[in-house]
Image 1 (cartoon, rainbow, N blue to C red):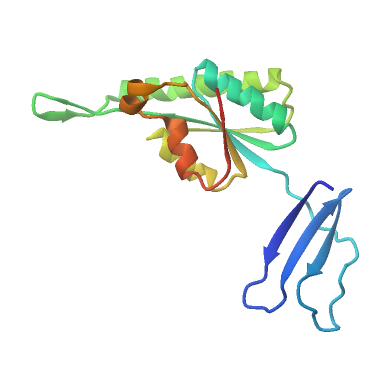
Image 2 (image 1 turned 180 degrees about the horizontal axis):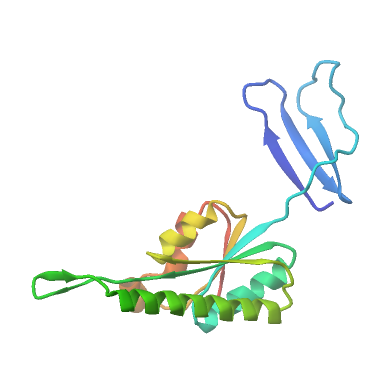
Length: 190
């Protein structure tokens, strides 16, 4: 059996319905309270599509993100893969004024993001991934960009730089923030 998903029919007094995926033949199994005679316990195989798992791997140019990507592909080789690169366009204060990034700085950041994602796609292919790869490059806080996109995924695989002590406290940890805030399971790879 590939997996079991449980769906609760709200507003109906029917117990739970399990969709069992076994040998590519989905069946609906009703368990819980006895239902009216219009329902049977096990229905005939359905001709519905079974959606695969969707994983997100945040990437940058670090060894840790490469390890996380390789591990994710090893663990989830059949999953849909989305690579995310979040980058900052930091503003800074200078002599009483806030200085915005120039158009050249924005273009350079966007170009670097494309390069990081292309390199990550190459790593994925080299690791044996043969499916379509979605890429997302977005300016913003990495933790927020990742967790926003995680709402549409089944899992996140993220690399950790493994900072400890004062460095971790001062710099924070994107991986730690994603673990705390993501709406899906997160695997941290060191």
